[in-house]
Length: 125
Image 1 (cartoon, rainbow, N blue to C red):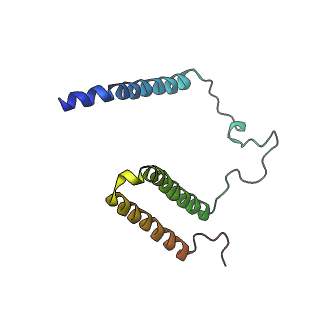
Image 2 (cartoon, rainbow, N blue to C red):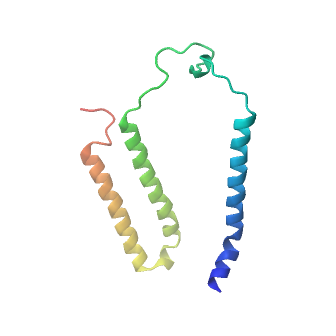
Image 3 (cartoon, rainbow, N blue to C red):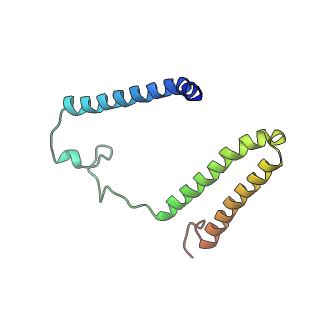
């Protein structure tokens, strides 16, 4: 009986996923079959406001930007978990409080490690 209830609850999700995959595959196959295709030298040139590009089109980005992005995502995820917890703080109980203290402690340890390694500095000194 519980399995049937689970199927009833998620039947719409499964159908939407199947229809989504079918529509996406149809669009990709249709674009590949119907779109005009020509191999020209000009198609591989980067477009810069109608002017010919100067230098390489591919720019390398320093790893420091990626590290900042990862740190931002980590603390953004912390906020996603922290706000609902704070909204239900009085009803959550002591166990939920100590779990959140441990969660924030792990993130603080990661921030301390990143700080110690110099990840949070823009310029190398």
